[in-house]
Image (cartoon, rainbow, N blue to C red; front, side, top):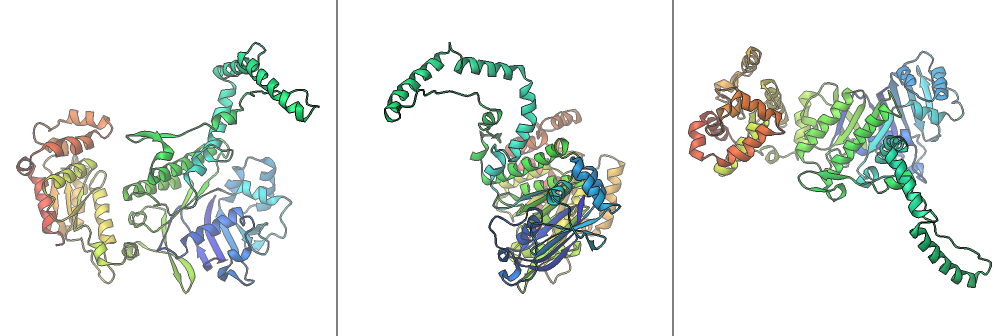
Length: 543
């Protein structure tokens, strides 16, 4: 099941808004414009009002009698029915839907505890008894990560936490049949409960002394007994801890906010997979993540976006709330970007087209040309090795040169073209038709390895003739940076394949070995293409 339309009426700063989402959705805008209100409206639809929360607290204007409602339309309803595990609930929903594959459901302030079913534009007169629980069984699973949700709420063991559910579901069955666990239980009984146990004898001695003092106050007391009960399975799991090795092995709760936020989101994604494989087989999930960039470095933000996008391709639906330009820059299939803006105290969310992204990014970066002119220029390379090597070279030998940003495109000319297009699109200021970097950024490629890559290169250069005309395009004489290194670091195809099998082998060679040991004149004379590319990038850089 998927959300195909969200209608919000009179909820906080949202007077009236209709949102038509895709598989992967990004809501972007400045602070205090109502992005979180949109997400909380959806949460209200799924979970209802918080305990003791007056309806006026969420009503637009916080006063009056205007109806507050959130209506969500779902497609794939018949498939959703088949994913239900409770046969009684499945029968109720199947009978209700009849042949309709699209259903709209509304929660309203007029009766906030009961949601209304709408089929083919017509409201069902009366829900069956206990229907709200049936409805929860039918709807996609809603996972909302707001900025108030902390690490401990998700990763510490608890009856209803994701970690608790996963551990209980996976380990309990295994341990009950495990011979070592059975032996542990028997040994525990022997140690603490046997009449021959020294521990039990000492406990009985202590309890006898307590009884003497107690019966002076309550003569009717005839016995006090201290017993160590065998710990229940859940009690054992309360001692569960999470450690992370990111170069330094420590408990997860000692890591920084960025790592904890990333771990929290990773656990939620794993929890969704676990539930789909065990408790909620076949069900789809709805991920709503408020301020997804919170505590994350831009590189980690991009990685998170990619991971969540993969979830959306597997059948789940993702909604991201952000004011980070990183989540806007990359263009994906099935992605919809909504610009959230408050005008006259009313929040609206309008989809934006690719051509409008540069304006949105411009505003997110502060709306000032000084923000856009950092860095002075871009050098786009193929892979992480080139990026690591050249970054090290610039830091060692050319720190006085104009600041440039070296970025890698993860592979080939097609991805470099996308990176170039993203930069050009993102850096078109308001009122200017062309990018401020179009005739400045420099592209550095490996020599194409085969005919297909050669044809891709020719197509790319044909479509971007200014690159060759201006001298913005550079190409290595060999198909890998490792073959272009001077002695003693030059590598053969066989050695490169060996590096590929090692974790970050080529990147570590570039970053920690070659860039840190090569001499400046050796770099300039023996790796002239790279030096020329840097020189051109500085020449074209903003002064």
